[in-house]
Amino acid sequence: MTAHSSPPSPRTSAPRPGASEDKRERILAAAERLFAERGFFHARVAEIAREAGVADGTIYLYFKNKDDLLISLFESRMERVNAELTAAIERAGSEPAARLRAFIDTYAALVVGSPALAEVLTVELRQSAKFMKEYQNPRFGDFLKILAGVVESGQEAGAFDSEMPAPVVARAVFGMLDELALAWLLGRGEKFDMVRAAGAIGSLVLRGLERRTS
Image (cartoon, rainbow, N blue to C red; front, side, top):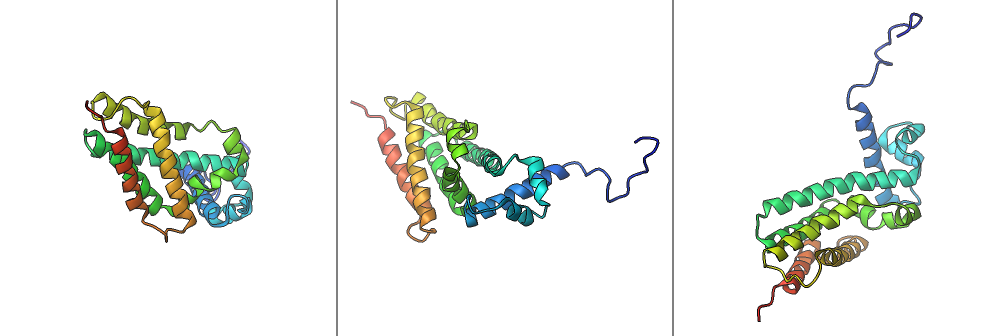
């Protein structure tokens, strides 16, 4: 405070700790809803601002542009997804098959429980050329590492065949789950039971990983 300034009124006082983060999260939540509802291309920054209850210009205090907002949304939500998957694996105990099923079942439950988020992560991200071409995608790398870690630990324990590299298995499993989620989302969840179908994928993968004894 300078000698010529007056004490701030309650309206202009410094924001409470965490207020900036709360506002950023409101913007992300609004973007999640509108990207899922209207699509990435059709959702306007001004609409996201209104949905979040902030001024249009406030968006640009936190994000460079709409692509940056989409990438930030992905990073934020994938961090949560990875944490939930890790927790589910830990709860499953040490048995390799149970840990792999926990990953697959939890992924399916997250899709069904948060369809708007699943729509953004599965469908709308593919609409951003910046995301697809330029973004390094470390959170998705973490996702694959978690899954590959489950497979690798099963191989080390002698429960899974070690012929197939764990990172390759992780990408193959994700490919099946991603395609399943895409079909479920495009069908608006009406054509099949996502969780049950994911369970079938789990059984298929476990049969393929089963260690053969001669």
